[in-house]
Length: 141
Image (cartoon, rainbow, N blue to C red; front, top):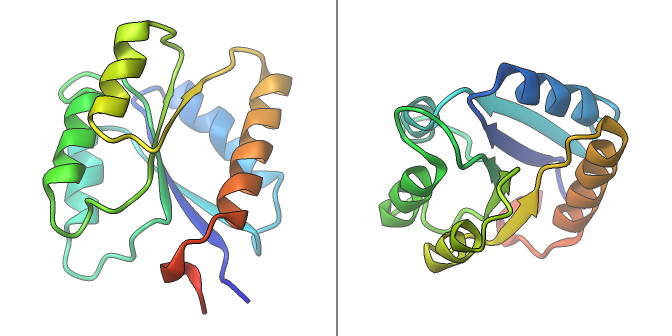
């Protein structure tokens, strides 16, 4: 038996965070929980605090002010505690350069963010289903 999947969404868009919160709220709390951060610096400060409970997987937007998603991903991979966290880039950018850059920085996956709520819900459901079935040793109770 495993505990609920813990997901952290890092996205500067309040509207996108709200949509994600709505989509995740439609799932059973026993399956998945979502926390959000509005910026890379906020997420890094939270994840490097002494008593933090780390998420199981991170959904990370690319286009953010202050610190874009690539810089956040680089900071994760350089950190001895955070470097093994699966990070899924979650962006509207279909640019080949962005996709290649994300994988070069060791992103676990690249998911194109749908602009239609129904399709967005399907993406979230598939994301949760995949990561709930993934073998993440630290998720065992």
